[in-house]
Length: 367
Image (cartoon, rainbow, N blue to C red; front, side, top):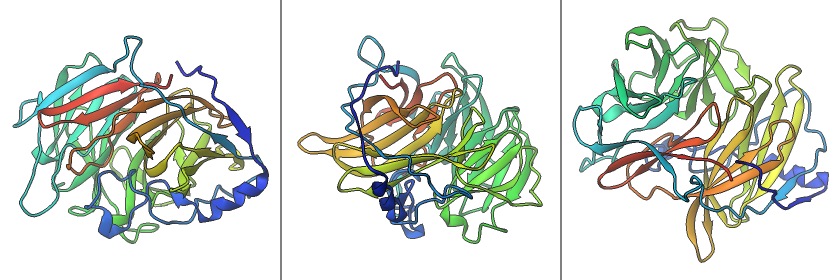
């Protein structure tokens, strides 16, 4: 796993100047939210996230040509962790809606906790389905007044934070038994327009929402209490506790993108790396880490004469050097979703793939 040597070429520091016109990690205009799948999918022009108090050092940009093969197991195929048919309220069924007016919907998001359990946001059926590490459904969390829930995160204490940007305009916290711990409003200092929130994250006992794929705003705690100090952090916290990270697109047509890291203890710039995909970048689907801090980046790329592919790239946490990659299939169903991938603590990702028959949650990793 993740030990493949990838050819690298080092560019001069001048190329980092291109980051000032970079596109934020999958950002969308509010009017585009319902029109395209995934908050981390379609990139629109936005300023590059500021790395913190210190300006980026001349760390050089790494240019990588990803020659990614299939990301399955040794037998050549992915491991299916859980699958469900479209339908009613059984735990082996998940909701799908195709209204005559409005966007088709499927389960909006998937995430995992430190015990290897998977949580599926089945907003069509008004619930979260919890799947055990053995792949068997083991519980349901009924949603409270969250008709348009789109994203969720699970904290270290097992509480689930569910984001609704448009209906309740809040984050509701649930304990492991499905009881409501509290409800935190989105609107407030740092968040003027709730439709521009691009994700929800937990870090210890803190609950954060991401603002337009840039900084994260602390809105409360995992016990459901609003935060009196809605401070910001400059990126997504890594699970090893050492860094904040962000990513964006520099030039989609040329396949140019970047990953940026800030050292958490000092808030100093750690690295900025440019990556080049072998085709046009259609969007960023994933930016997260495992427990060791390895960075997982998933980018939808349209390759000449090959069509679209989802390229999974793994980066070493302290220098951002690519250490592996894999090619995943692209979802082609019309249903609107928000978060299709989740990184496991021990490494690897869970990816939800939809068909006319149902949805399959499969495990992939960099090779």
